[in-house]
Length: 284
Image (cartoon, rainbow, N blue to C red; front, side):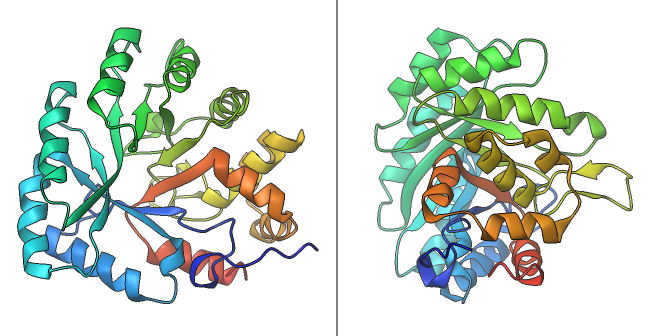
């Protein structure tokens, strides 16, 4: 087994800054004060190296800033701005964030693409978002959606794949995820982000709904196989946590870096669940 040097706070490089905080989004139910309190507590904790950016809707920026003024953070909050006000609202939202640089550090701007991923629309995204901020665009799954994924990458943005939601239609199939990974990995230097229903490490059936949920460890191992010519669909469909964990442990430092360069992060409304799963699998 090849050993990789630890990342931030001793976190293995495969998992460093992997989990973005989406406590404000379903199925999360936290209020703004609760979400911020938990986020800053996590940043001070032993597993802080797993934690990425804090996600907040553009429509809730005034609320976020009001609460941050009360909190008086030691460092600006690393923020991913989720655009829920339409593309036209992006310049104003970014201006608000940049005017409060003592409270907020804008790292990422995320938004859904229109049903037809239009090149003019993508150009406007590039114009509105500063060059040093990551642009994340989510094409809608459906006929021709992989062409949309390609266009997003070609315009310098990260594509986002939604891995679940409130109904079974929100969950992409194994084939759809595999096809997405194949497209993204075909572009040199491309990265993607994942979101929704990935709070658990390993693929599993939700006992309440009977829906199979994708696992973020499955996705990491699938990306590693995608880059090395392995069986991607087998990794995505596996429910064997021990086997997935063993494969993850045996990745070289170079392979870990390549995996995370492609699979940059995912959003989770829970931080405790991914930590507990990784600890149970002896990966932390």
